[in-house]
Structure formats: C-alpha cells, structure tokens
Length: 137
Image (cartoon, rainbow, N blue to C red; front, side, top):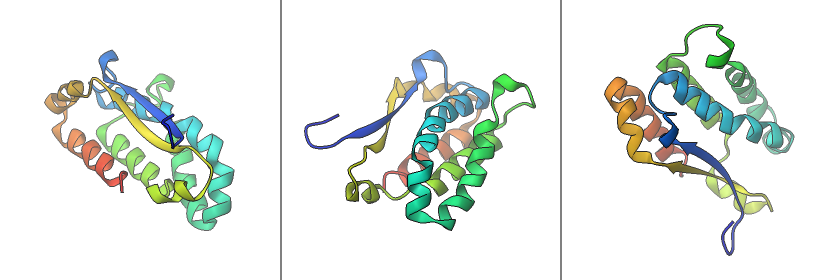
C-alpha cells in the first residue's frame, strides 16, 4: 500500500526458477491470478455483464490446468492463451480508480532471470513482455 493508493499485488519470484520453462511460467502466473478472479468474479460480472462472463469462462478453464495435475504437458501456447484470457477479463487500469478497490499490480522479483526463459523460448518471453506492456494501459 502506498500513501494514496491501495494495490492488490501479484508476486512473481523469478529467483525461485519460476520462469525457466513454460510449465513453471504457467503455474506461477496461474497461482497469482486464480484467487484474484475468485475474489472479484462477482464484482466484475456485475460491472461488465456478458462481456466479462464470456471471458471468464475461458479463464476458468485455463485456471484449472496445472503442471501438477499431469493431464498433459503445458506448452508456451498454453501460457499465451492464459495471458490472453487474463487480459480479456481485466478491466482497463483507470477502472479501479472509480471504485474503492485495490488495483492489481505485478511485482517481479529478480526480473533479470527472465533471461532463462529467453534462452529456452524467446517467443514466449516476448509474448510475456508484450502482455505486461498491454496491461499497463
């Protein structure tokens, strides 16, 4: 929390090797956003109606997938789809200023470790960085 704003932080800890494979990237992002959408589902649905409900159906399916359930191997395509689904469910940044709600903010520890993913899947890293820029507007 800052002096004049409340934030809902999403912590990505690259120090722990969370960005070295598509499966780890997926699980890291999924684990941070799962509770957020659970907590704000009703509020967002009320404010955005069918637009949010349709987008949420996709994110709900995506949030069930995990490398821990061994259904199948998680690929960079799954990560890109998860990022797309999150983007489709998140309102624009200025939306949060209209309500007395904490705005989501992404906190990345040891972002220099993104280079691990850049070595194994540069296209996925580029997609993640583009997604971060897109969600700051």
